[in-house]
Image 1 (cartoon, rainbow, N blue to C red):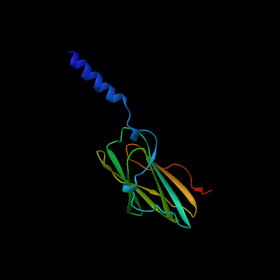
Image 2 (cartoon, rainbow, N blue to C red):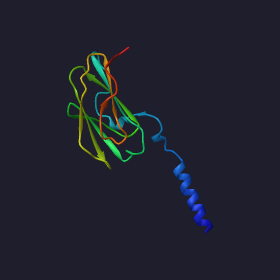
Image 3 (cartoon, one colour):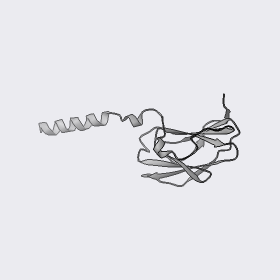
Image 4 (cartoon, helix red, strand yellow):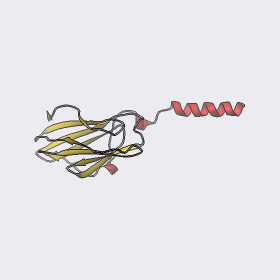
Length: 136
């Protein structure tokens, strides 16, 4: 009986710890970022933030720009893309444990502008977080 109590205590201690992956927002790993990382003159900036939370821990989000895959994101990550200004289509396609339909958003940006988008932790959705902001 004593061993059972000790085993239970050890299991509960493991649940009380927090993985560093689930604390704060971090940049997407370079190994899962495929394009638009180097700024050029006349570019605009798209920032995509996938919210923090345990709900979507088993889900990844494939990020597309103009129907070309540019990155794969996990919860608590942010992606900064340096894109040519103009009319752009941003797409999120969740996959993994909670795959669902793709979500498209208008990501039209002018030269020097920044537009930020948010993906919920579940990976199912995409929303513009704020109006376009000129770079300082």
